[in-house]
Length: 333
Image (cartoon, rainbow, N blue to C red; front, top):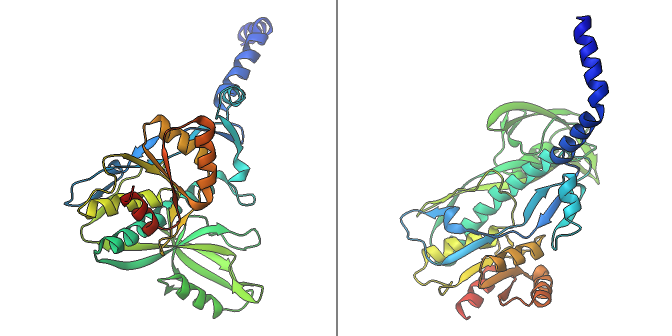
């Protein structure tokens, strides 16, 4: 044992500089700091992400995305050299002191919600029937002052044994309890049923549990639409383009007119197109991928035009305010 100790000590003494260097290099190339690097993305053909049962896909409609790289030290240093590689603090995506996993969960809620919005808007505009079967109540954010063990991503199904089928029903039940009272929730967490609690408190004259909740509709359609997004794909920014893809598949004409259509934007139930972040990286990626048209929400339109002009891009940019507006502009091109 003594011989092993002496050999080990001698080895460390003779090689400690190399060992320290090795540890530093491993840390630099594997341990991410609390940053991400945004880079130009590309196109995702929507026919690869959703399928309308029994209908042939038409046109070439694409999602755009922001490229992202881990904030390891070598890549952070490269971002100071490579054009359009920008460092973004993860804190900018956080609300309060939440964990990064909460950001991911919230993005998954956004994607699930906007997909259902896409179905409703597309089927309405194409003149097809749809049915809203139910409403899921998802925990979108937990306020710091809340006394609860509920987590972002939980789907609330019951409160104190009473089934709740909508946000309005849940709010009505909470009003029935006293301030300071502990109530119990049945929730689906990672597809498993579990029990959680929350304490009622008053804020601005309203009884609450300290949760920001988000509604996710369950919509059935005929023909059936199947979404197939990857695990690392989330967020609401693909809502507009998904709606366009579904709509274009259902109608007789092809609103793409043979061009490569790209774009971004959220979609609300009233057809309003909402702004997004990262339009610069999405537009640059779309151009590099050969897009003919880029659709930008109204509040992102000027930024997109500026990027186009600064880089001399030959791409048509369409301003989007509502879904009807986008359809008309595509048809009249």
